[in-house]
Image (cartoon, rainbow, N blue to C red; front, top):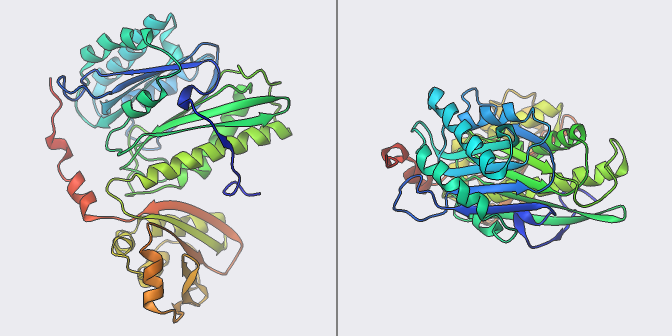
Length: 414
């Protein structure tokens, strides 16, 4: 059974469905002191954890990313503090100080060390944090920690998202049952190597740090690194996985069958969250899976998939329900992958549009119906090898342009 067809029992409880995790969310008025929307959240493990993380590959990294990467060297991360409305990116030394202040205030409220706290921010880039408003609300966050606030924290991390993204599953593991849960945000500035997205995952599985890092890295590569909405990679991208061992399972052994079960469940959870992010792309109308097969190498398959996924001309065609296979072909041609034009086949939702590099003769109205659907697959068979690669992407709409053309004109209240 492939990971795409494998299913798990979904359970209620959101990010606190795994044993030993609590959360809370409040309003700090980060963008506007008069706006009561939730914009700060806290996730806390009552038991020691092992923690793995993955971060943006952008060379311009937000202050919280730098602080998180330093804190990950701690052997016991216990909490995640997160805010929306301000990315704390491109804010210089003050930004680092503010991120550390968030960690310190959280640690003080929970009786932890600052290095046991991960700090995350998302929102507008380049404006200073209203740090006084933020730290003033951290004691209330800590005091309100509970297991039933999972919906609130999923809402608190949203920026341009139109809906919260949350999922919890349970997985039999030996004589025990483990639980994994995730919340995520992300709607724009999304590109492979992660986009402007945050994803926090909790699990009560007992697993070693090195194995958790290995499973996390593999899962991120095959899920969050396979999505693209607009070709932009952000400054704040972060995935954090915390495992506290409270399920009582025998510790997962590296290379054993239980590690495979855990890694497949983690990848499933991340894939579901990644697909939610693309479906909620800023003003997108189409969810498109680009499946490349028959490439000479894995890298060639990736080049083709990512180039087609990020082509503005191709994405505009999808927005207009136009099965313009010529635009797909031209993107393949400049992808720098090894190809032979006369061998390429292109399918829209299983219907062949191009055979051996030329029109396959499928009626236009049939192809139009395929790409008019809100979700469809574009399959590209290069027919020169056996390598494959898949990317999840979207169309590009006029509404996306309208939505993004004046972000910096919105100032955060002092």
